[in-house]
Amino acid sequence: MVILAIESSCDETSVAVVRMDGKTREILSDKIASQIEVHARYGGVVPEIASRAHTEAISPLTCSALEEAHMTMDDIDAVAVTATPGLIGALLVGVNFAKGLAFAYGKPLIPVNHVKGHVAAAYFEHPGLEAPFFALIASGGHTSLTYVKTPTEFIPVGRTRDDAVGEAFDKVGRVLGLSYPGGAEMDRLASLGDPDAIKFAPAVIRDTLDFSFSGLKSAVINYANTMKMKGLGIVREDVAASFTKCVVSSVTGALDKAHKEYGYKTLVVAGGVAANSHLRGAVKDFCAERGIEACIPSRSLCGDNAAMIGAQGYYEYLAGNLADSALNARATAGKAAF
Ligand code: KG4
Ligand code: ZN
Figure: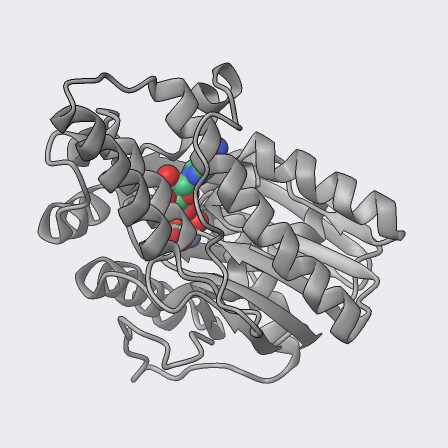
C-alpha cells in the first residue's frame, strides 16, 4: 500500500510517500523543511514560531513529496500523521492538515506515535527486520530501552528519569558555546578530544535499566564553572569527548545488563542521537561481540522525517489503529511515552 505521511511534532516539517507491502519497504519521497536556523538564534525551539513555520511549509512540501514520488492523491491509499508526542501547536498543524486531506480524498487516517516512528525508520534498510526485537531509542525528547513485542506494541524496560540524552547533548553543547542544537557539533568536537581527560560518573541508576542524564549534564556544567572560577580554561574537545564517552558507556552498560536479562538477538538504535558516530561505533562493536544483529538507520533517517511515520503508519493500519475525523493531537503520550 502507498502511504502519504506527515510529521510536524517539533522543528522539522516533513512529508513523505512510502510503499509498504509485506516485504516491500520503500521510500518514494521524504521531503524535510528544517526550521533549525530560525530557532538557533533563540537557543532553542520557540513553539509559536514552529507552528507558524509548519503552517507555511506543509502545503508546498506535500505537493513536492507527491511530485517526487510521481503520484497524485489518487495513488495514495492512506494518510498517516504524527499525533503524539510533541509541541502541541506544531502537532495540531500536521494533524489538521492530514485530517483535511483524508476527508477531502476519502482516505483512511492513521495516527502515529512519533517515538514509535523513529524505531520504524529501521525497517527500510533492514528488509528482514521483524518484531520482536529490542530498541534503544535516543532522541531529543525521549530515551528508553524498549522491547518491541509486535510492530505496534512497545514495552519500555528502562528509561531516563529526567533529561533525554539529546537534551543533555544540547545543554552541554550550549555550555561549550555551540549553537542549538549542539548534538551534531558535539559529535565532531568529541572526535578531536581526549575521552579520558575528565572522569564523569555514569548516567545509570543502579540496579535498574534507567538513566539520569540530568546528573551528568550538571556534572559537566559544574566542571566548566569550577575551572572558570580557578581562572583555568577548558579544552572544549576534551569536555565533549569525556562527556560522550560517559554517555556511550552508560548506554552500552544498560544494553549489556538488558542483554543478560532478556537475551535479545536484534537491536534497533533509533532517534536523532542514533546519528552520533561514537554511539554508532560502540553499539556496533557491542553487538558484534555478542552475536546480536544491529539495525541502525542511516544518519539521514535518524532525525525527524515523515518516511518513518509512514512505515509505522503501515503497521498501525494493519493493526486496525485508525482515526476518525475527531482525531486530536496530544503533547504527551502518557507515562510510558507510547
Ligand atoms: O529524534 P530527533 O531528531 O528529535 C526528537 O524527536 O527529539 O532528535 C534530536 C536530537 C537533538 O537533541 C540533537 O542534538 C541530537 O538529536 N543529535 C545528536 C546528533 N545528531 C542529532 N546528538 C548527538 N550526536 C549527533 N550526531
Ligand atoms: Zn524525533
